Amino acid sequence: MPGTNSRSDKSNTFLRYAKIYDVLNSDKDYKEESKYIDSLINKFIEKPKNEIKILDLACGTGKHALEFYDLGYIVEGSDISKDMIDVATIKAKEKNKNIRYYNESFQTCNIIENKYDVIVAMFGAIDYLVNVEELNKTFNNIRDLLASGGIFIFDFW
Image (cartoon, rainbow, N blue to C red):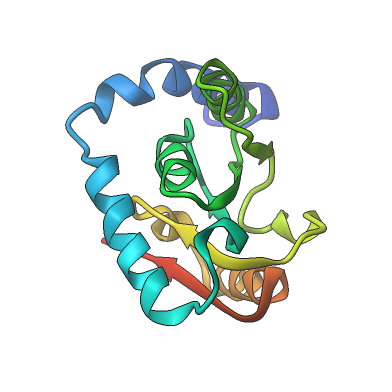
């Protein structure tokens, strides 16, 4: 039926997008953005980098996660799109980076059973929340995933 959003339609859309995501964002400076996030973490978290656990929410194909890993952090990622997670997982394995990925959205990330010192949501991902209920659910989930003294870093457009 035209105009419906079945799970299959969404899955096909994400698969097509995952295949071209890195090409579409080839001019994005992930390294510099990650260094900026690193400077914020250094201001607010008083632990050695190799003990700081980061969750990259809405991680896409994992480019920020790879940069955070290279900066010395313990990194995990999550995305609503299984296809994005598949790409991110392949990249991490090809580069011998130990990064675990979850296939969860902002609204379902509460099932991840870890605590994080830092949670990031980059590239305007928070803007995809379309109502106050989703925003509240997201902030509650993130609060529950943060370790004591943890921080949430996000951007919006």
